[in-house]
Image (cartoon, rainbow, N blue to C red):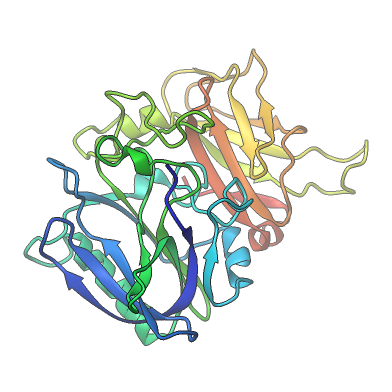
Length: 348
């Protein structure tokens, strides 16, 4: 069952408190869209999952992603995304697994209320929220809208909404994740929150979209980001996208045009067989790599992508293995294409 009334709310943050007690403590953020008084964003700071209460947290203080151009054009207030064409690759809806919003390995597993400085989710969220209020940033809150009819309205489910098992599997879906993005005068920032118990790979659909892959004994964010298991991240992402030639010199779409390319790098000490792997763009088009494609140990190779056009206006590039699971993904903006003379390099 999809998240009800899923959408994005464009507003100004006003004030907040941390509700630290109870089964599911929250950051309660009051915001105003200038239309009908203040509303409330209930943002989880602790998981309600039994035996695993930790969250996984990503923040980006210099968020560069093509979605920001779409956000800036939104009218102030709530925009419903559920059931619209925005719930797809390249649309306005968030998807932590398919949208290439962040680099997975940059996440942190955090508890909600540990004594001492800089060691829990509250310590991480508070300076970001303080700055957004003091500098009058515009906030874009993603989640499920609620309104109980007596003036208590707002948004909740401001976190990843896929990869769940019982009792939360009914909330699973794709392109319906929560989070919040901030627009300051000179830059963008973003915060994405999930639960450590959720799966890092989920079904695309149409059958059981957002359900864990595999259904049992799946890899969780807790597993993936566990500092004790030092090689798990490389096992999941043995090959990464290091560079893309998005806008080659010369005319576009002509027989004599230079091809667009994607450069892949092998991070391991063993050769990697790329047979049936795919490179996918923001529109879901893909280039399937040849059956004899191999990357040598620690090697790099440039692949032409004639069936996977890369937009000069900004886009996504995702590498999928032979099972269709995401190995690595990046995003880029129009500004990055222009600054690099058509070439975009990605920090690994």
